[in-house]
Image 1 (cartoon, rainbow, N blue to C red):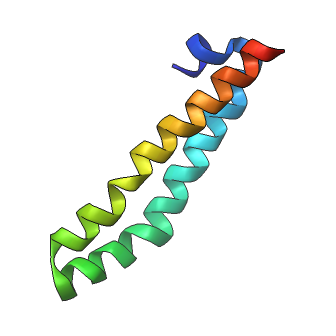
Image 2: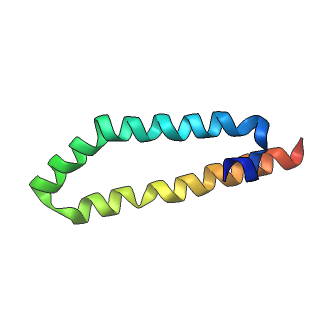
Length: 70
């Protein structure tokens, strides 16, 4: 998808950012989420984490609008 959206020249940075984010999530965030689920259950985690896909859509929209203006 990064190649389709941003072209081959910018795709490497996008893929590297996705890989780094996934590694960070596995090393740091996933254990913390597991502890929260053990203490209070799934509902708070689902509510809090539902914001991130919306933020990703907003960043992608901002990036696409920035390319159109250039």
